[in-house]
Amino acid sequence: MTSHSPTTTGSADEVSHAAESIQARLGGRRPTVAIVLGSGLGALADRITDPVRIAYRDIPGFHAPAVLGHKGELVIGTLGGRMVVGQSGRFHMYEGHSAHTAALPVRAFALLGVRTLVVTNAAGGVNPSFGAGTIMVIKDHLNLTGQNPLLGPVREGESRFPDMSAAYDPELRAAAKQTAATLGIPVAEGVYAGLLGPNYETPAEIRMLQHLGADAVGMSTVVEIIAARTLGLRCLGISMITNAGAGLSKTPLSHAEVMESAAHSGTTVAHLIESTLTHT
Image (cartoon, rainbow, N blue to C red; front, side, top):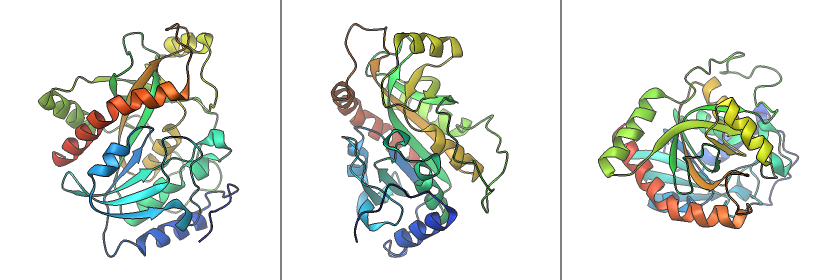
C-alpha cells in the first residue's frame, strides 16, 4: 500500500478505518495499554515480546515521520505482563499536521480497547535544576500550541467539555515514582509546556515559561493527552530532559544534541515504564 497524504484530517471516519486496519493485523490480540515513544525511546519497543509490527504506510491516515528518531511503525505485543501497542513515531503539528491528525493514533487505539495511555517525550529543561538526563514524571501541562483536537463537532464517545483537573492519573504517577524509587532511578515531577515549534524557544520565552510554572518544554504530547482524556483514558507522561532551555546554557540547541541525550536516558526510561506496568 502506498503512503498516505499529509492532508489527512483525522476525521472520525479516518480514525475508524485506521482502527479497523490495525485490528485486522493483530490476530485476535487486544492491547489495553498504548505507549507513545518519543525521540530516543526505540529501546522500549525492543522490549516488547512476541511483537507484531505494522508499518505506518500500511495504515490509512498514518504518515511516515519526517523527524530523526521516529521510526514509523506500531509494535504490538507483551510488555510488563500487559498487552501493549507501542507507537514508534509521532505526527507533529510543526510538520503541517492538524491537531486532529496528531491525535488520530490515540483515538484509533481507544477503538481497539486501549484504556491506558503512556506518553513519552524529549524535552528541554525550563526549571534550572532539571539538567540533561533528568527524568520527569509529568504532573500537569500547559497547552500553548494554539491547537486543540476537540475543535468541531463532538465525536461519538467523547465529551464536549472534558475535565482536565487530573489529566495525568495520580495513581499512575504514584506508581511510576514508587517504581523508580525501588529501582534506584532518580526522577523529578513537574509541569510540561507544549509549544508548536519547530524552532526552539528564545531565552525570553523560557523566562516566560518559568513565570507560568513550567518545568520542561517540548513540541508534542498535549494534544494526545487532551484526546485521551475526552475518551476516558488514564494517562501517564514521562519527559526525558535532553538539554537546558535557551538562556540557561551557553550551548546552542540542536536536534543532534537532543537525540544524543535521549539515547543516554532511553534505556532507563524503558526499564522504568516496563516495571511500572508490571505493578499497575
